[in-house]
Image (tube, rainbow, N blue to C red; front, top):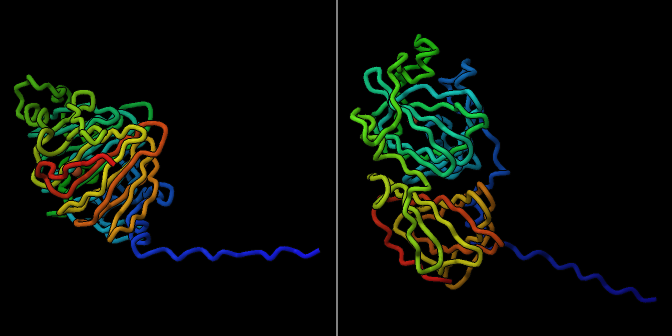
Length: 322
Ligand SMILES: [Fe+2]
C-alpha cells in the first residue's frame, strides 16, 4: 500500500508589522511581581508591596528592564498591597494616579500634621497632586491591586515625610503623619483645604458620566476634560460591549490599553496590511504616536479597558464603528 506523502507546511515568517505589534504587548502572565522595587522599604515588612512594571519604572529605580516597554509621556504599573500594609507619606513633583482594580484602598494626604483620608473601591481613582504629601494603606480584608501611572516629566525620587527609617514613630507613619484626632475623612463640603483639593481629584466609577460613542462603546473620562484636570495625560475607562469595535485611528501621541475585564482584540494597520492580537485581563498594548490602530470585542461578554493617552487635551479622534 502506498502511503500518502506528508506535507509539512513551514510556518509563515511573521511580518515586521506583526513583530512590532507583539513587541508592544505586555502579557500579565509573562511578568512577575517584584517585591524589591522600592529600596526605601527594605527591612520594613509593614511597608512591603509588589510592583509589576508594564511601561517605564513608575517610581522604582529599576528603569530600562527587559520585558518592560519604554515610556514617553507616562508609565503604567500594577501594585499589589497586602492586607494591613501601608506606604509611607511622601511627596514628589509629578502627578500620580492610583486606579483601584481589586480591594479597598485608603489614601491619605497630609499637611502640617493633619491628614485627609479617602477610601477607594474597584474602578475608583485618585490623582495625587504634585508636592502634596500622600500615602496609602490597606485596611481591608483582601489584597489591593491597583494600577499606578506617573508622568515622566520630572522623575525625581520621592521625598519621604513620615517614614519609619527616619525615626518616625510607626503608628504615626501608618497614619501618614496624623497624631490621634488629626485625621479627617474626605468631605467635599468640608473646610479643610486638603478636603477641597482632594474632592477635585477623586473619580468614583459610579459617579462618572458615561460618554456614549456612536461607534458603540462607552468612555468615562477620569483624567482630562470632563474628569480630573491635568496637564500631562488623559485617562479613561472604556466599556466595549460584545461585538463592538472601531475602525483604525491614529493619534499624535502614544496610548496604552490595559484590559481590566473580558478580552479585547486589538490591531495595527499599515499600507492596507492588518495584524491583530487578543488581550486578556491585565494585558496591555502600547501604541506609538502615528500608528493606525483599532479594537474590537470578539468575546461574549463586555470588556472593560483602562486607556491612558499621552496628552491632556480633549479627544480628537472621531471613532467610527467597524
Ligand atoms: Fe507617590
